[in-house]
Image (cartoon, rainbow, N blue to C red; front, side, top):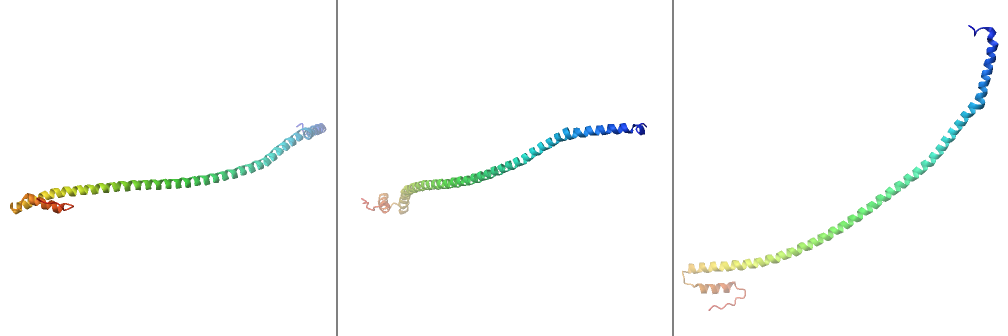
Length: 168
């Protein structure tokens, strides 16, 4: 094996020292500063994001408080509107009930008047029909002793309101 040959050790050590030196200098001067710059930019960017996120978080909390206040305000306003609408509806229903009650009372009084008139009319018809039946019954039961004219005069005299009939 040629690597283990002692005569080549010095040249191998020379090239190893040169390669490591060049590599060390390149890393020290060019690569590591670029990595540091990238890391610093990243750190600055994330740090700015964190401070910006704090501001955004505060803004979000403020907006959330405003939203909650508006929701509460809307709830209160809707409750007021519902209460007002309920009051108006109750007043309207009370007015309509009163109007309906008045209409019903008017119709009821008209019906009572008509009923009274019909009762008077039907009583008059009943009396008229009943008197003719009674006259016929009395005439037949008397066997012709009492005449129809006498019975009619006395019957009208009893059923008349004034009672001032003079029978001839």
